[in-house]
Image 1 (tube, rainbow, N blue to C red):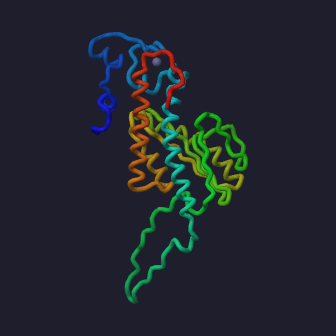
Image 2 (cartoon, protein in one colour):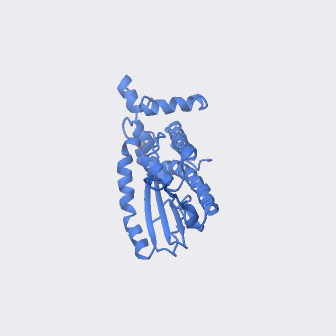
Image 3 (cartoon, rainbow, N blue to C red):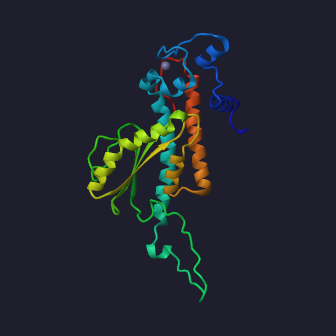
Amino acid sequence: MWRIPQARLSFLIRSTYDTLPSPSNLCLWYGSEECCQLCNAPNPNLQHILSSCKTALTQGRYRWRHDRVLRKLAEILEVRRAESARERRPLKLRRPIHFVREGGGATKITQPQRSALAGSCDWNLRVDLDRQLRFPTEITTTNLRPDIILWSATTRAVILAELTVPWEGGMEAAHERKKDRYLDLTAECREAGWSAVSYPVEVGCRGFVGTSTQRFLKSMGVTGPKLRNAMKVLAEEAEQGSFWLWLRRKDQAWGKQGS
Ligand SMILES: [Zn+2]
C-alpha cells in the first residue's frame, strides 16, 4: 500500500468509506449548499460524481474510465490467447492414465479446470475500444457491440464479454442488465451452429473487482498469481480513473484525455 502515492491512497480509503468532501457530505457536515458543476443537481454525493451524473455520462467521462479498464482486460486476455495457441497438445496426452493396485480403490483425481480456450489454437480477439467494433460476420450479423469477442473458427466457438465499471452497490443490477442484453445474440450464434457463452463482468468504480470478473478470468485459464495480478491491475485502473474523475469534478470541459 505504501507504494501508492499518498493522494491516491487517501482517495481510495475515503471513497470506500464515503468521507470525501462531496457536496452532499459538505452539506451534512457544514450545512453548505453546492450544485453539481456539470449538471446542476443539488448537493451531489460521491455516487453521483463517480457514476450517475448525466452530463458526465454524455461527455464520455465514464466511457473513458470504462475503456481504460477494458484495455487492461484485453491485454490480459491477449496474453492468454497467445499462450493458449502455444499450449495446444493432442487431447490424448492431457489425461494421464492412473493405475490402481490390485484390491486397492481408485482415488479420485481432480483434473485442473480446463480453460475455455483449450482445444483450439486459432482464437481471435476483438475489443470494442474505439466504439468501432464489428461483430464477425462469419458468425452472425448484429448491431450489438460486445466489449470483447473471442472466437475460434475451427471449433466454432464464441465467447462474449461485456464489462461494466459501476458504483459498487449497483454491481448485481449491472450484471443482470448485461446478461439480458446478450441473451438473444448468444441464441443467434447457437442457431448459426456456434457454441456461444456470454460473460457480463464488473469492476467496481472504486476498485472492487466483481466475482464475475474473477470467474471469467479463471474460465479463460488465468489462475494463481496471474489471476491475483490481473485482479490488482483491473482494480487499480478503475480506481485511478475514478480518482481522475473526482479531481476533474468541477471542470466543465472534458476533452480527450491523455491515457
Ligand atoms: Zn451531475
